[in-house]
Image 1 (cartoon, rainbow, N blue to C red):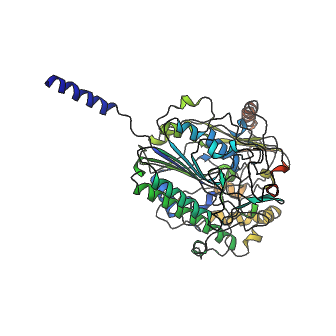
Image 2: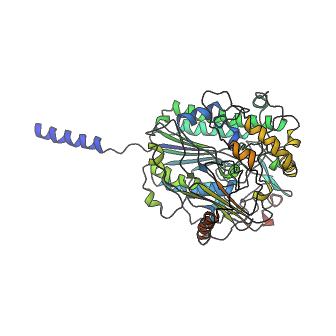
Length: 540
């Protein structure tokens, strides 16, 4: 009998010792069009973001993190682990009238996590195709969906304007249009839905929550109100004289409070200590009047829709009590397509099971503050707009044809502050008066104020030598040494022809693997006027 007890006890000990730890809860928060200079942990002295800052500084700030220059390609890479050149999403975005979507033969993140037993929920912006129902969230691995399919819309009435003449309602609960949300501010609505999902979740099961905020993307243009936030948030920024920037700051503040509410609910359900939380923008901010926006990526060059650092260097952090090392700034290169293998690995899956993808498993590197895994990043190859860019080691090459946004929006755009800045510092006016602006920029960079905050903000030094000696406007071939010139002030292509050629060869190798662009055609049958005023999967 004693022998039987001894044998049984050994079995129990063996079971305890080999028990698989519970899979972590995974929360991805996407801030739409958030600029580099729109959070105080990056040094913004206009917009305090205390909740985002706290999570960032107690987690891992991703200081060399890159996304695509536009919404759809970044979201496609996040979900699929594939670079946009391998999904047909390398040019522009999927608008509501495009008969295209993230290809159905690609298994995406929620589907992979479902194989590990995860419950999967999505809230907010999809933007990966909706011309047929099978391209929408409920058919791509999510068991619930509250949000919208298209790129942007009104924050209160949830209408979406793809272009003049294409205007309709776009708000969904699972697979049904939902009109009960009219009048509710989307940031608040999405936060409340996220809190409700966490509150109702069976904590014995792992959850994947994809919280893709509408904030802080501009609303409908040209017919709508692009910058919308409750007055209480707007009025909390009396330091900003610019009406547009003040409205935008209110949008960021609502986002910051929303994230805090989600974290609080994770803690109240005892889920926080077993959670992995990723915060990321989808691209640089639409700055200084582009798309009627008021974001700022300063002092980085360019903005959303460009291949300059202001368009592709993303605001991001990873936060988790499960990290072996945290509270540090990661200077290792990371690309948005790395999140599929990284989060799958964090969930206890084997990234080898994912098959071919363009991402790297960064979980071990991030958790231990380990050595760099990735040495190069393809920013994009866009044959439609004739622009391409790549980072290899310390060098970045930007190759531009004519008539593209990287060529047109190649400046450095400080945030609006004065009441007349929406005219004085509008990106089109800056472009027209570049020589005068260079003098203004020198003063701004040399006297950049520090924000008063609990944590020391990250500062990007453009280099006094660069500022005083070289302001190079965009050329067709642009080479930069990013560690010494993060603001891309000095084009060093001349004299470094061997480096240029080496990076061109890399671009050509990637181009050989590229699939055709998918979102080139417009289907007039998509028009909401034909569907009772709503955007629907019109080819069902």
